[in-house]
Image: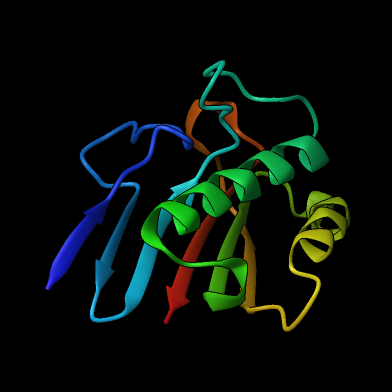
Length: 124
């Protein structure tokens, strides 16, 4: 059965999609831009943006009854692959034990001029 997950602790979807969908014990979190849900703005710099995207993911995980330990896969989209090292520092401080599988790509552009967007899959 499919369950839509939504929380005001993460930014609302900016299009016709859900923050997350849970199906059969798997949580699919849509790509999270680094938007602060309280201010609706993005912080400056790749490290601050990475942290905000991860905070948004954590809020959605919590709303769905999952934790960071349940995350099995992340997809990181970067506006500039030269930011990989700085993003990776923040990412490593977020997933300190048994980090999930991950892939990172440079893309031509991200919505709203973001430097990073992170998609996540978690399994119970």
